[in-house]
Image (cartoon, rainbow, N blue to C red):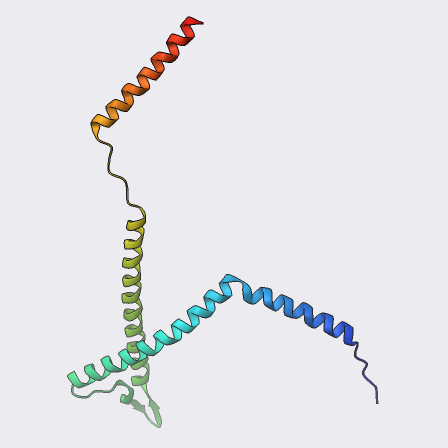
Amino acid sequence: MKKIVVDKEKLTEESRGLFKEFKEFISRGNVMDLAVGVIIGTAFSNIVTAFTKMLTDLIGTAFGGIDFRGLTYTIGKLTVEYGTFLQAVFDFLITAVCIFIMVKIVNRFMRKKEQEKTVTPPPTPRDIVLLEEIRDLLKENQKTKKTKLK
């Protein structure tokens, strides 16, 4: 049998380098943003799933207790469960509507924030503008007099 020799110093040095590289990777802002997004997405998924189930039950009750998942079509010995597909499409549409509504709400809040940030000062009254113009003309006139005296 062949004996395996492990260089402890080299292994320790490599593990430190690997740990340092991992620390740099995990410290990047994008990784943290992604982690927060995944966590919030998972929580939001639970809300959408509950809403989809509630809506499916309401629609099923309105149409006499129809459940899409039970819809099948038989061709010879083959049974095609197309209801499962219809249910998946329905779930997707409900999810898309929920996300659309959430984006609209967030965009509305963001627009309000932007409007608050970009509050423009009221226009300067006309008399103030005229006084500033007179001041500038007087300064100009003073400069021309000084240059003529020299």
